[in-house]
Amino acid sequence: MKVSCLRENLAKGLSIVGRAVATRSTLPVLSNILLATSEGQLKLSATNLEIGISCLVGAKVEEDGAITVPAKLLTDFVNSLPSDRIDMALNVRTRTLNLRCARYEANIKGIDATEFPLMPVFTEDHRVRLSAETLRDMIEQVTFAAATDESRPVLTGVLAELSDNQLAFAATNGFRLSVRRTELAEAVPTPQKIIIPARSLQELGRISADGAETVEMAISNQRNQVFFHIPNIDLVSQLVEGTFPDYARLIPRTYATRTVVDTTSLRDAVRLASLFARDSANIVRLHILPGQGGMGGRLTIAATSAEMGDNVGELDAAVEGTEIEISFNAFYLLDALNVIHTAQVSLETSTASSPGVLKPVGGEDFVYVVMPLHVAR
Figure 1 (cartoon, rainbow, N blue to C red):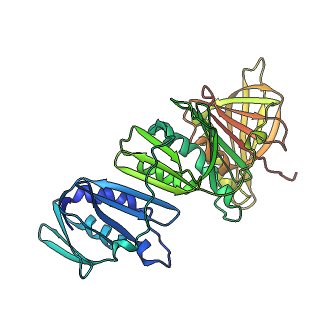
Figure 2: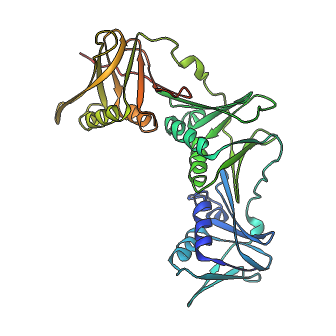
């Protein structure tokens, strides 16, 4: 293999695939990145067997070939080089990759490319196309609600539900639920439900942030993998096996009180209260008081710490319904408020022991359900 490319292009490609490199593995080759020539370009690939990422880098190819080299060493070395052309040549007999850039030279010992796991190829059948910006928003608004505890693997994933011309993402950890929907340009031939690891979607959101306009999605015929294709980048992820909870039943259909408030003001008030809630299980108390004719309502956010003190914030709100006091985990509220981008947000409540529902005002495609906390009087 003999290849030349710009340092910036190689460094960018390494940063894209690098997050798929296995950090702890009994297979040494999974700590490596595969460098291989492909149709006159340099293809970089990495996998931890749950997620795999491939990226094409513009390069001048003189001789075809392939080798895997330690990801961390290669990335750190390339990032430390000056902005210039990098010439790479492989000694097949010793499995050593020679790199030259400006007045620097290195020889990196690798592992034969045949030991690297085969990367599945993106399937052309039943592709779903959607805006990269919309997909990033969906990932941002849903993945944070997935469980991080591996005791219930199905909850560490995001349910992707394809039906007619709609795609819905849903995630829950048992104490909160986040659902985001979007319309598709084309109807899907058959309804499908799959569970994608939240980590895989977060990586997809990261790599699609660099100028991509559309993302193509496809499910393998065996229904055990999902593929995402962005120009010059492919991501493949294993799917989570199991049955996702019937999330539609978890969303309250009615409410006794609906409170509309400025999103930024509520976020700031909850953030201030969270400073005092740290020592008391992150509990913040909301007191909602209606005004006259839906105007002049008030929302009070308070937190108390036996050691640190207390905090009270008061916001103007449009309240319809009855007075209510209800408590929530401050960070569960903040997580949702950080991904709601409309000027106003509504909070729908029924009783102090019933779930609260946050929705962006003017955006019906996002719903967030959060369980209340019991506070002893």
